[in-house]
Length: 83
Image (cartoon, rainbow, N blue to C red):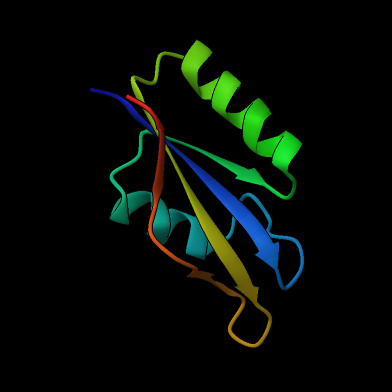
C-alpha cells in the first residue's frame, strides 16, 4: 500500500522542500510521497494531489519549524486523512 504524508507547518516560518527534516519525517512515517502545507487550503490540495497519484493512505502531521536547528518538530499525533 502506498502512503502519502502531508507536513502542515503551522509555526516558525516556511519550510523548503529539500529540508533534511522533511526526509527524516518521510522515513519515520514510511511515506512514498510528501507534500508541505502552510495553510488549510494547501492541506486539502495536497490530499487531493496524493490521492490522484495513487496513494491509498494519506497521513497529515502538524509541525513547527525550529529556526535555531533548521529542523522540524512534530506537534501532536498524525491524522489519517484517508485509507
